[in-house]
Image (cartoon, rainbow over the protein chains, first blue to last red):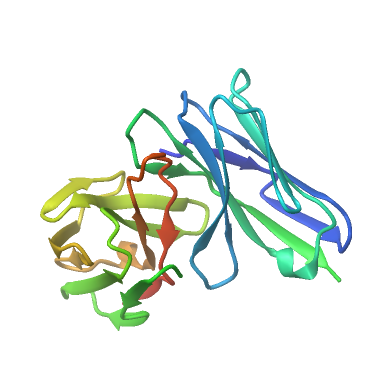
Length: 112
Length: 115
């Protein structure tokens, strides 16, 4: 069963705007990861946040984690047309577990 | 794609025929995974391997079997393909590492159509 659920399912913005995607999950986690998938391609790892972290940055990406609400958000600042892709959150539960449980994804369209 | 290849990349087959998909890695990672991706379902784990000859079932393992005789190869077999197995199949790899983060690296995918 899906662990993470992304919201919204689809998002369309203008180039230069910020894009925010949310992820909710059901059980306690070891870490939460975000992946990007360009059309017709495999998934690419973007960023990982551990359960004891609240915020993490990587370039134009900012991820927050609220374990009390079992939710995470991914913010992409100053979006570009090249950011058009589907974005998935995935959770790792349990120490030593190397299984990821994926959400259904948010499809982001950045209009030039 | 982090030294991961999948073959074939596209395949069309008929119901009832056996199909084997291959995943090959050059990263010497311990863990390998097979997922299927379908509209509205995201990625779902079929089987995974935590070492040579060590495999386990995932969420949607019915109708699939796997084998791993070498570190670098992980095979997914559909013994008798059905139309419900039409999907895009992704292989992924992960190393245990000291961080144990579970970060996975994905192959390019195989699009399988069962007629």
